[in-house]
Picture 1: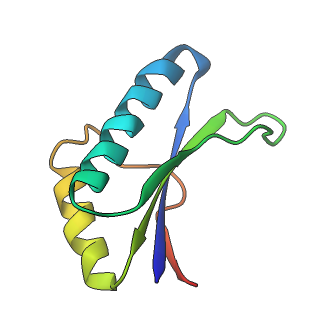
Picture 2: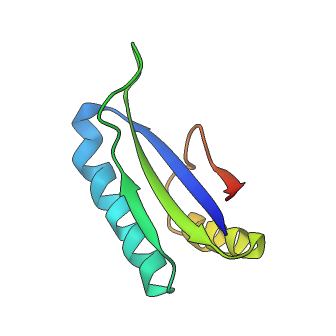
Amino acid sequence: MYLARFCYDVLPVNRQRAIDFIRREVDAARANRLNARMLVPLTRGHGEGAALQFEVELTSLDQLDQFATAASAHRRRPATGCTRSAKS
């Protein structure tokens, strides 16, 4: 299994819009029978904004390409920071 995590650095003023966006991403992943969740860190580094995260479980790396392509079709800007996959 692979985990793909997408991180979004957002300003506090934009937090609710970002949460709504990530919820739509989670719903879309679940509609495609993928296990997905939103992660909200409770702590952050000094001087850093809140980094909301969206995580999806994949059974193959091919799914990452398919998912990223479909997600970027309706994403205004790419995720900043950590779009990574790690085999578990």
